[in-house]
Image (tube, rainbow, N blue to C red; front, side, top):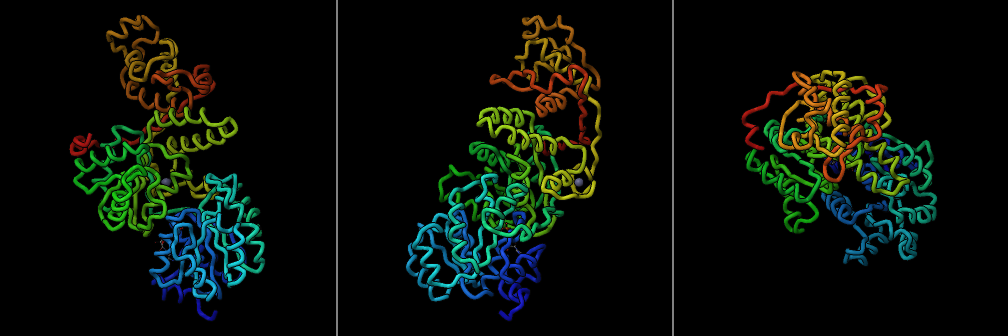
Length: 513
Ligand code: ADP
Ligand code: ZN
């Protein structure tokens, strides 16, 4: 093992140097020390076991949860000349692979966790030479994690059979509880954890309320040359969005979701990876295991599941380090729907889910630095301002909207908590209609009590009330009080609103609607 890791890196991968904590992790592994590497997606986790695998005597056993991912990794490893193989249920050359392992002709052997518990596999390992156990997506071993896989619990007995072999667990998970649990579950010393910086300084984060989302995204696409991903909530939505954006922007736009014909899906993905200007409208399933460093923007046409999911999904932009854009468009109805769904999960999980959603709400609503909130969420202490997010670049004004919020809530209450936002606005601004006449609402004290500049506040106030659970929507779209209404009505709470700086609306963009 005389070679120097940097020269191996340069020779095999052609990269000039290690990035971030890669070197630290590689040094520990080469020194035989068990390690948990917490590195965000795109930080280059694979290299931290692939490179030692080529230098150490014996084979690195890599545990990975998805067979499709494994085969991608296998191709990537073979492409740089690493001797690698997979041993999974779908492989037809298992006997040959076993032979290569026993003959010491493999640097890397990828397996699924369920194989780890079989006595056949254990026997095989004992007859050959194991240099390292790498456990990818190691948060799957923890019930605290967002993706617990019982199969991962089968690993420990196998690892313990090889006490001299170092373990390298890899994850992008942020949550401290989960990290500690991974260390315990896999028998890695607590001082063996290396956490990479989560900051992606080249990504510019922007978050805006929806205001004709398709038009907003078409504008973004026109402003942003290069390939991009648009995340859409539903399968049908991806296709509809793709059709509209294709017409509106003239760019190649494709859809991607799990319901597509596998051949079409495969082709869309391959074409996207090869393209320099394609836009792909996809469900969140898209992006996992895709190696495309030059994605220039990621847009969200709806709310991600959590801050972690948002970080993960936006992290697919700008992996090459060049400037990239992440723009999230959110609507009050996204929050209302998310809250409704939380009400449907088992009671024990509800507080955690609610916390996750509130954290996302705080990110969407802040007048401060977006990056600061993101990084603080991952346990870092970032500076006040990053200079590369929408709020840092053009600070929004904050106004006290408590009075308007009270009027809004009163109107909801007086009309019987059953009408939607449009009607509530009509009542508050005194816009007479057949409906308002018939309901006798023109006689209410809240009729026509908002005018002038305050009218423009109604929509953002309605949105903010929904986001904070001051209002909820019933199954028919009617607004009713949520738990946060009381404090506002009683004058105990205030509502500060962030007014984003006005962007000129472009004629060109309007046709995308
Ligand atoms: P992760 O598994 O952490 O999401 P990957 O291992 O897929 O990340 O690596 C992300 C990208 O970064 C890949 O394209 C990889 O080739 C590239 N990469 C990794 N290490 C380096 C490095 N030291 N210099 C340049 N590029 C690198
Ligand atoms: Zn900022």
